[in-house]
Length: 175
Image 1 (cartoon, rainbow, N blue to C red):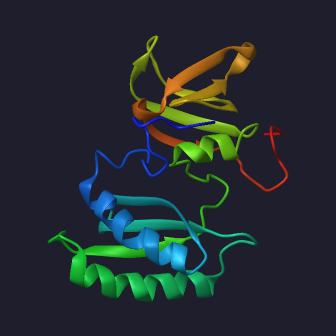
Image 2 (image 1 turned 60 degrees about the vertical axis):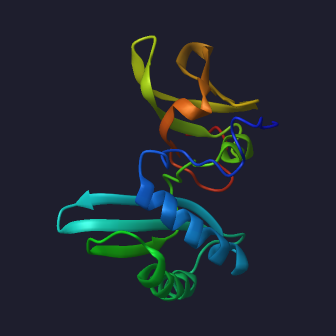
């Protein structure tokens, strides 16, 4: 449940490998917080048709189209002034949906008991992809119960990507 100095509650899965996403996170997170929203994830990637900068937001009761529009409008102006990226990109702002990304170590505790898919940076016992039920956090380690009841302990710093599987409110452990 607690986090050590090695993993701050603000460390986010995959950010170290993507400096543009990390920079956008630093700009967008205070804006989202001031609007009563949680910044769930930032992605900056090449897709068909060019680069896409995608932000996932959440708040109690869910995100509305008006929320996405307002954050997009405000953030677009801020990024025009602050972002170091010298390439064109398309900005998308949306709710996290059923495949909700897990980015912060606190997310793994918050969604304890829910099904998740986790990909690690390096293979662990020859495996990089794990699917199972989250069993919370122990210091800087994420606990995941996989098929057969086996408990896998993954260092948070070794997680490249993580998301809930078929997340719907009230479906804890049912998918």
